[in-house]
Image (cartoon, rainbow, N blue to C red; front, side, top):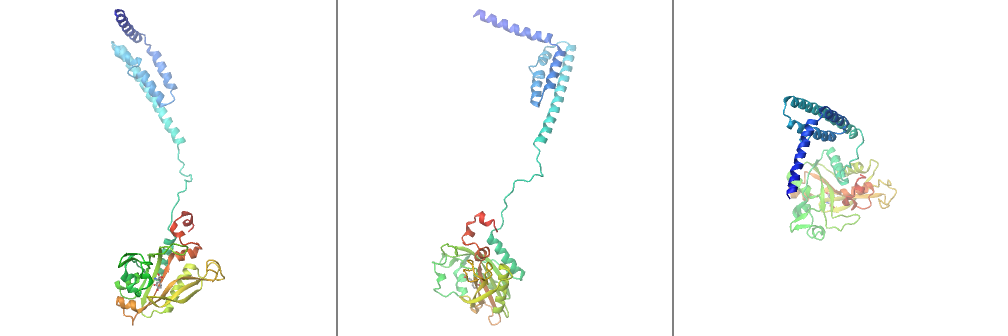
Length: 356
Ligand code: DAH
């Protein structure tokens, strides 16, 4: 034990002696040459940092020597050396940092003229496109576009439109009831009544939106679809005005070369009622699957406003006459583009929708 202690003390002395030796033997010129050579060799700012620690750090030879120094002359000389080395190290570090920035600027440059990866852009749904197209056609004719309500009372959806009691549309088998007096509108026609209640004649409006029926979906039916409702009330409006307007609309939608035909029909709210047909735009009337080989396509209902509606809203039916029409937008869309199944418009598959 005694011997171990003695040896430990001896080791300490030896270590101290070596330090003093290194101070006295340190050749400042050799140290500077070494340091400068290392600085010149450094190839990155990390290298420079290591050199800084090695030559100027807390445990560097120079720092230790400075700590031991007692005479002014040696102190000044070593300080001057420290400053020269620091300047050399700083200079090299700046050079390398600039070189690194230059390299990154070249290597990591973004070429803003390179075409980017394409961004997929959406567009309006086909039904919305047709809706806007129809609105534009009528705005061009001086009509106003009005909003209806998707939740309607039976009074506006049926009574005011002259649906008799017991009409099949009043049955919950055909219509979605929210309560005894409230339905999801089955057609846009209630907008006629609401418009006439809100304003006096003349009336030139269209109203487009969703309607709801308790239908099982198939190729020609969906429980929700869109309609365009038109209503004109003025002095001297005749069936000829209605047919002229629908002829204009059908040509705008299906092409100038189309012929139109009107066949008698029945609706509770029009008298007389007609159904508009257009010559097939696919085969120009010679017969094809779209027109089921008849050359003609049925588009939708229309008629002269039944005077009973005028009584309901307080219009003078001796002075004013009017016409109305109500067509399905999905039907126009599938016919125009030869889409075989109306449900496709509700599946919202981008592969289909992106084609329009
Ligand atoms: N509301 C009718 C339906 O949904 C369509 C209709 C026919 C509207 C004749 C009208 C019209 O305004 O005059 O089947």
